Length: 160
Image 1 (tube, rainbow, N blue to C red):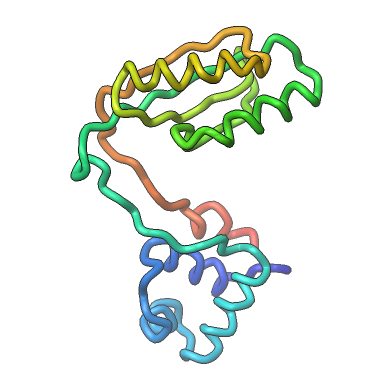
Image 2: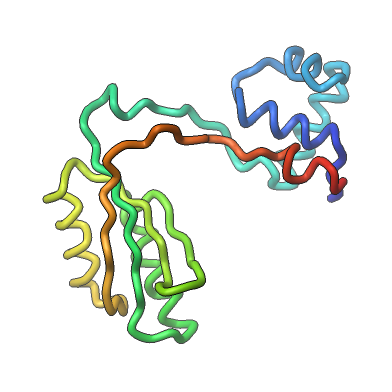
């Protein structure tokens, strides 16, 4: 499926406010309501929209520790990557997992109640023997901002 500028505008608007009405969305992107709804359904069916969710202010719920963790695997066969990814996907505390190039293999974003909870998560992962050679932890002190949406029109706007 080829995306055009209107599709990109729809995606951009929906990621900023997934609860906006179809009428408001249509007005924001310059379409009438019916064609706009058809495009949204087409984008959903094609998998460009993978879901809708609420953004939760975790600080309102309680203190939370965020840790970025660099992980290096001891072996680099396809099975090693698959085994590691399967194991971390099962951990609710691991909210992001990225295979990266450079001096280590994976960058994880982990959330926990505190340092002890984080250490329990990592020790549990090490005990599962999923091929971790070493890991380094970076505790987040402050997050001045976290963007929750991608700059779709800036990145892809000129390429459609």
